[in-house]
Length: 90
Image 1 (tube, one colour):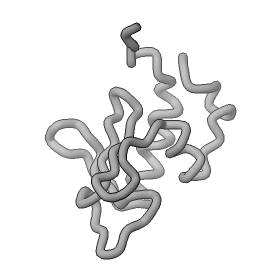
Image 2 (cartoon, rainbow, N blue to C red; image 1 turned 90 degrees about the vertical axis):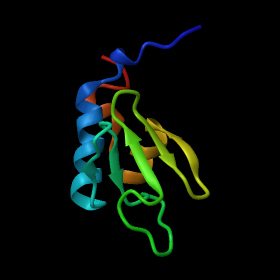
Image 3 (cartoon, rainbow, N blue to C red; image 1 turned 60 degrees about the vertical axis):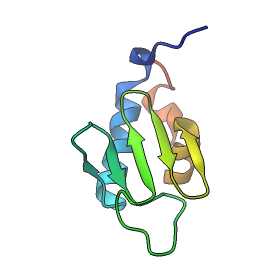
Image 4 (tube, one colour; image 1 turned 120 degrees about the horizontal axis):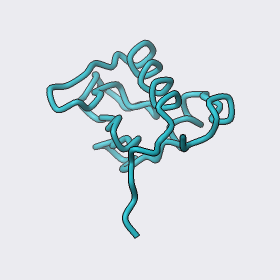
């Protein structure tokens, strides 16, 4: 079964992006990804060295030890309550 990512709740995505930008030094890369500090923390980390977030799919990628992070995992780590935004999907 193929997933359609256009159903991901945009309000929730914006909350994650805002948090990554304000609290984790995030910035938008040329490819549209958000480069930020890894929410789980790394030694000698700087924005984009270990972590990127794909806002179209709602998936984070830690290039250190944490691997692919689903949006629900990121929300839990960032302290974002998914229910306040109406859930995962629109």
